[in-house]
Amino acid sequence: MNRSPSSSGLLPLPGAPSSSWALYRARLSSLLQSVDTAVFIAFWLFGLINNVLYVIILSAAQDLVGNGIPKGVVLLADVMPSFLTKLVAPYFIHRIPYATRIFIFVALSSAGMLLIAFTPPSRSVAVKLMGVVLSSISSGGGELSFLGLTHYYGHMSLAAWGSGTGGAGLIGSLLYVMLTDWIGLSVKTSLLASAFLPIIMLVSFFLILPRGPLRASARKTTYEPIANRDSFQEEREGAENNNFDDIPTSTASSSLLAPGPAVAATAYSSHPTEDARKDSLAAKIRRSKSLFFPYMLPLLLVYIAEYTINQGVSPTLLFPLDSSPFTEFRSFYPFYGFLYQVGVFISRSSIAFIRIHHLYLPSLLQVANLVLLTLHALLNFIPSVYIVFVIIFWEGLLGGCVYVNTFAEIMEHVPAEDREFSLGATSVSDSGGICVASFLSMAMEIWLCNWQVDHGRDWCRRIKAG
Image (cartoon, rainbow, N blue to C red):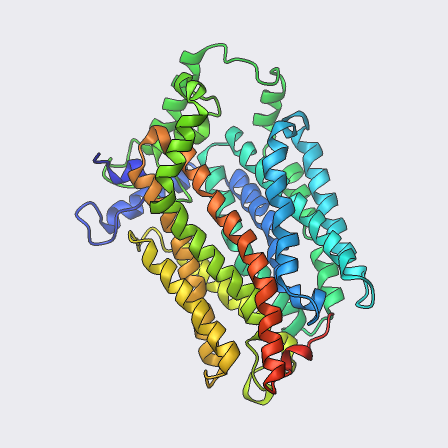
């Protein structure tokens, strides 16, 4: 089935017949004119703060548990509670007002970071991991709630949320490296400073976000049937016409961060169609099977490979201090994380200009990165840490590339009536990949560190918990 680029939610590749800089500028101008600045800022901050503590915790994993416990334990504690929250919470969270949820999320996140920061190195690591679990629950519930909140604020709130979550990886890893390595603060002080970041959610919700749409919604009964479907349809069509009529239909919207009219209309309405209600579980299972090989498997592979590198292999990618830019061995791990996040941010932001259609190629290259870095951890044949820096950055580029292009391919090739389900079903691959990688990395880090010690390199044992 042929579709215009605009219906797929993607900008045409520069140089294509449907592409010109004039059209890009026109599209951008149209988007900016339709943006409510307060809504955009509020949702960008929601996305940033909801995800940034997850990144900070992973960056601090080595400082939290030292060299005696694999970093995959921290990854598992940082991911599994969030994943389970997303599975369970949708059945009851709608009964809790958004304002109350914000206070709960801020309290859980701050309490988790304070528990991590105030637990001394001599105390059980289990206490720190409990703090990680609290922050993870907050992150999972926050993602559910803020994505639901976008229903009341239109498609630009989705754009802002997506941009904020993308920036969280880069800002979180940079912030931890800056506080601990560049400024020289202790791990405890750095984590204490991070514990106050969730307060920004309160500022965003109560002071920045316009509350009118929520107040209007509060006057209606929960899950009240739409009284006038015709007026609701007219409102949707009017919103699309106001935002997109001045742009040629051959012009696509700006990537995943600003869906095209078809995607925006889907996000605008949370009311399923009659066909969707009748869609059987068996049909959804068949649809999921059709997604596995073209979309889910490459995404699963790339997440298993990159998170096994990040949590299982990179803690053992150590070099003599006199041949590195660092003064202590604990500095390698968070800097690797920062370089990885830089690569992810760049590749996730490049979808409007660079498209990858063959998803297995970057996925297999990522597996090759895992093999290469594992062999180096065993055989120590890479002569300089700066080469490893380049490989870790390349790892981030590949990971972000597969993630964003997987969903771009779905938006472009899956029929509109199946697209929403397909995007959600495929997203399970990244969570599943991270969970698998957490178990693999726990075994790999211990094995690699023991191998290095047995062969005269005991650097991995010189790292102490902060």
